[in-house]
Length: 321
Image 1 (cartoon, rainbow, N blue to C red):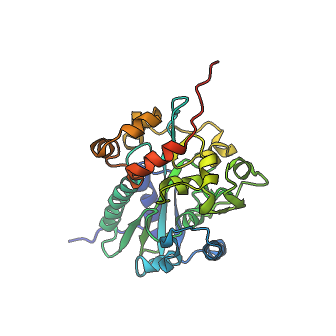
Image 2 (cartoon, one colour):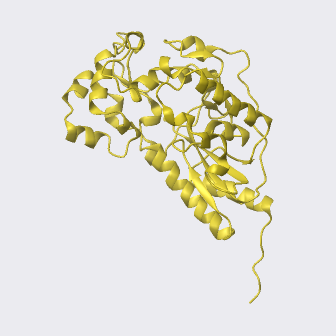
Image 3 (cartoon, one colour):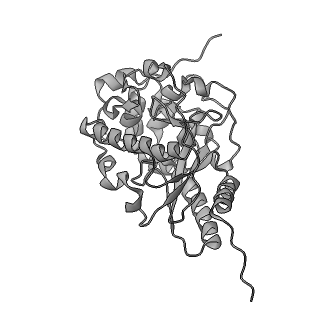
């Protein structure tokens, strides 16, 4: 029986990116492990961030495996980085409580993981001897730094990844592999002297460019903080936010251009999230909470936390104009 022709590593690399795009990912890119000089600088910056206590009580951020992809998959030589655009061209009702856009649709951890696994199975069909592992941001990996290394975008001063065509409204994932793939050029930072995100943060959580102190961050306190009461300085600055915060992204000039609006069914907003009020949250019983947040990344916020956050929030009144 004649042997089937094999494609080169370069051809496979291009085909792999096309297969990822077929799953709805864009942008996509490939990086070599262990990465270049900037990746090493990002790793050192993580250590300084941890030593300063900026992780608050998120102890998992200190996992040593985060610094080395081969600790997640032995023999890793390359990784495919993917972005999933969650920007939907719609807004919350004026005067409603606000929820960060990433939580509007289905849990992105599941969406990205399932699609990356399909890409991984395709890769196994091409090279049966390869190994791979799908990773979302719950895995101990420097995900934004590796996405930057793969050319998806650059890490902005607000610590989110920015793509010049798609802005920062995207979640990212990675497919680690033992294959030696062709790498793309790392992204170049285009933030320049802009400080819009730093100046807009109501709690001064961005203490210096690229450094976010979780102890001052509205997103951290509304999602991760398990204390009965929010710190006074956070409660006073909460505004309408009850689940995450998008302020630093909303003011970013790269998000003020005409951006593609996702029509992905799994990323469309649940209608109640766009018209949420304190009276709604206060009336939730466990069955309502389960129904509203089934398959949502926002289940991490427990019912009592929703009530705590809503009690402190100060929604903007609807405009009379």
